[in-house]
Length: 368
Length: 209
Image (tube, rainbow over all chains, first blue to last red; front, side, top):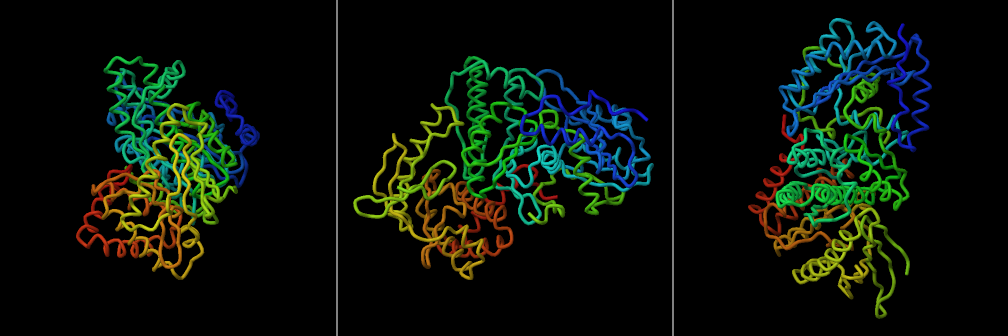
C-alpha cells in the first residue's frame, strides 16, 4: 500500500486561525492503514477549470486531493468545450493518482460523489460521466453534491467553524449565506457579476489569462493612489457591472495598471465587506467564514477580519490550498450527504448547471 | 448617552435633544475601508438620509422626525420611535403578523408612490409602533419612480424574509403585497412583481430548471 504523500500535506500556506484544526486533520490522516468499518468517499470536482479528485474517510479525514487545472491562452477566459476536453483527457490519470496518493485502492471506496452543479455544462458532464462509470464498475452508490455547499462544508471542517455567516466568493459565486432551518439561506449576493468575474474580466482587459486574481492582487499591492469608482450597494446586495466598465475606461484612458488594480480592489472589496457586515449585524452571528477562490486575496481577508472584530465575531479564512475548486470539497460534502442517505441511481445522475445552494436541504444541519 | 444599537455602518445612541428623547445616529469611520473612500460615503449617505427622511415624511410616511444633521460629522439626531423591530415581531410569532405585514406593504407602497426607493428594507429597518409601521434607516434611499428600483426594494424584502424568517416568509410576502397593491394599485403592483421576477432570473444560477 502506498504511503500518504507528504507533498499533499496540509501545512503549507495556512492561516493561523486554522492551524489547530488542520493539525487534527493531519494527525488523523497519518493513520494510513485501512480501518474496518470506516467510510471512504471518492469525490470528483469538474465545475469549471479544475478537474480534481479526492478521497476522504470518516475516521481519517482528507486522504488525498489531486488536481489538474485547465489554463486558457493569455488574454482569454475559460472556453467550456476546451476545458471539458482537458478534463476528459486527464480524468483517469487524476482518479488513479488520487487513489494511490491516499494509500488506498478503489475497492475501499464506499461511495462516489461528484459535483452535479452549478457550473459549466460541458465540464460538469465529464465529472458526471466519470462518476457514473466508477459507480457502475465498483457497484457503489452515487452521491450528487452541490459545488457551493462543498466550498462551505469543507471550509467549516478545515477551520472548525460551526454555523458561521459565510461569504462565498469565487468566479461562480458572490454570496453571503447563513444557515437556518437546515438550509443555507442567501442574505445578500451579487446582482450581476461575481467578484471573481470582475477581477478576471479586468485582467483579461490587460491581456492576462483567467484566473487573474493573483496578478491583480500583486499589482494592487504596489499602489496607494485611489481613483474614484462606482460604489454600488443595493440593500444587502452588490453590483459590479458599473465598476467593471468604469475601471476598463480608466485603463483605456492610460491610468497606471497598478493604480487601477488598487482602486478596483478597494472599491469592490469594501462593498462586499459592507454587505457582509450588514448581514452580520442582522443575524448577530458569532462566526464569520470566507471561502472560495477569491478568499485567497490577503487584502480582502484583512478587511473582513477587521469587520468581524468590530462585531466580536470569530473570523475564519479557508486555508489557501483549499480556497479554490478541489475534489476535497466534493468528497467531504459527499461523505456528509452519503451518511444522510442522499444517493441517486445512475440513470438520475445528470448535471444541474444552475443549481442554487439555497435549494439544498442539509439534514446534518437541521439543528441550526 | 447610551449605545442602543450597533448596526453595520452606524452606531445608534439614545439621549436628549432640546428636552426631547432622541436618537443619535453616528456613522463611524469603517476601519476596513480606505479613509478617502470612507469619508465620502459616510457624508454622502448622511446628507442623503436626512433629505429623504424629511421628504418621505412630507409624503405621509411614518418615520422619525429630523432634529439635527451634520454631514461632515456623519451625525443625524432624530426622534426616538418606540416599538419592536419587525424582525423581532416576526421571530416571536406574534398574532398580529398579517396586519403588520399588510401595514408594511402599505407604507412601502406610499413611499414608492411618492417617488422614493428606500434601498435597505430589511426587517430590522421597520419599527412596529401600535397598529402602524415606521420606516427607519434611509441611508441608501434614492429618488426614483423606476420600476427596476421599486422592484429592487421588494427583492430585498423577499430575500430577507426567505433568508431570516423562512417559516413565515410566504405568508408575510402575500400580506405585504396586498397592502402594497392597496396603495399603488393592482396594475402597478403586478408590474413591480413581474420586474422582481426578472431581476431574480438575472441572478446567478437563478434560471428555472
